[in-house]
Length: 369
Ligand SMILES: [Zn+2]
Image 1: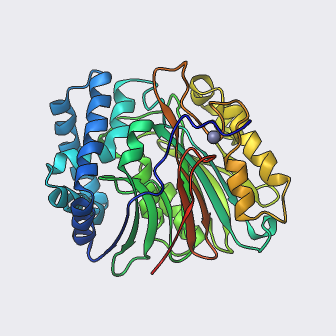
Image 2 (image 1 turned 90 degrees about the vertical axis):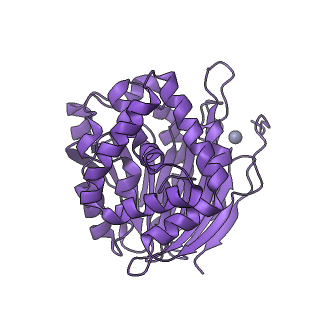
Image 3 (image 1 turned 180 degrees about the vertical axis):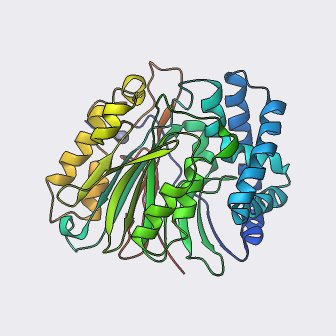
């Protein structure tokens, strides 16, 4: 199918390099992207309105929940406080948009309908130049694209980060300068838990990227208490890759096959499939072919995969518009589509990211400075 120009993406996302203590990098994030932080808060305020959760109650919950996160990871809370200060918004609003998935899952099943994604990791044996690669099409409500940014962040004593996120939010996907990367997908189950003593997926991913080895990063991710289900692929240059299907209280692993691991929005681990009610299969039936399409496209080039091959695979339109390269569905109420398409070269420590949909986006290459 030819590219369908139903969305005209921006040429590139705004970029910011920050350096300093957690509060400093947060403040720089808030100052640089203040208008976008406000817009992010607005997106989720409308979302809470839509599910009937009063904003003042949600803010009060966020204020209580943050005490738990502060005890677990004070540096991340300091970074959020910095974002709030820099953007001149109440800290509770920043806490709330960072814990919102855990909160919305408590209130109503089936929210976050637009949040899907298709992801992959490829070990050196599968790629043309022996590099370890990762890929993500990040599918979310279209309103979020204007608030999406790329940040290179240097905190003394921690690996430097290069990542994609919505302004005001700590992380979505990316890598560190030790060559460890993480991408992810939404999962839905019958195991969602109250969000008052646990964390959301992107908090676990940020914690994993404080690690400089594959094993430590996987352990950090698995050890972070979670309030809702979510999928994560972790890979490290020359060390390995694994998919972690995480539900509250438990994780299930999916290992690469022939050097390739691919995931969308349903469980693949056999034990998980046997013991969980996988609600993603029902709410997003396209998940079942998206992972197959990406796997088949990558497997066909096994041993010779290049970044160009990965980009081509991410632009697949089978099942359009709910394809790997997702477009707005005129038949649906929401306007979710692939907001961001990324190919990460963990060996070269470079991230190529395009505002989506992937088929029409322009990839910009980011590297550590
Ligand atoms: Zn497309």
